[in-house]
Image (cartoon, rainbow, N blue to C red):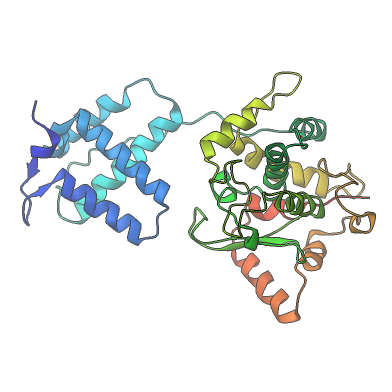
Length: 331
């Protein structure tokens, strides 16, 4: 069989190999500020396909035949969709660059599959049970507790949360900054924190080994290294509820907005599931009024700072991350 590394396409310009085209494509993605993880997934998917079907590079017709064969494999809907998105994006970029022929379109009529919903409706009782499972007498358990609380409060992506440093938190303003280099969108954003979450985070930072400096991640491993998302996924799944329910990091993110809206929107609703009187003084446990007023209280500082910060938040899409920050304890 002809190797993918020896196949070439004669276009209007110089001969272009798969390697050259893929490398140029990934360079463009990097220049467009695509996340490193996204670029890695692009590279992995593109090379998986062309390693299995090197003949696909020679013409659009062969590309369609090979790609349909690849998509016919028994894979999860999410995997199917990623294959379609990544390889199609690469091929269409090649067409725009004049590396591949525009017609016929190998991806004509191909659509994404509907994946099972990942929505997790976690009620207050389950949240309290989950938060009671980590052993807070150990630093690892305290870190896990705070990370669960932080995710439910802010709906932050696990990959973003695990890159946060102590300097990213402003406990006097009850806010966290997600730096651009850590954000999936590559844009910095500010998210308010509830007093309960802020208190738990302060406790985690205070309990860190003394030899750890300010450049050590807040949610680091016990050995002082960055905690991998996969490792956090394994630890979180280990905290099973009595009924056998287990959660993944993204389950918490997806449940956060709904959980916050359920509790935060009720004028006399239940207290915030993470509310623990031992974590913060009673005078910080104020009744929730409307979200806008609460946002203004939490983004304290000079009038100019508050105005600039509010404008920045308003320019962002109304996502779960924005909803999450409005969630607070109720007296």
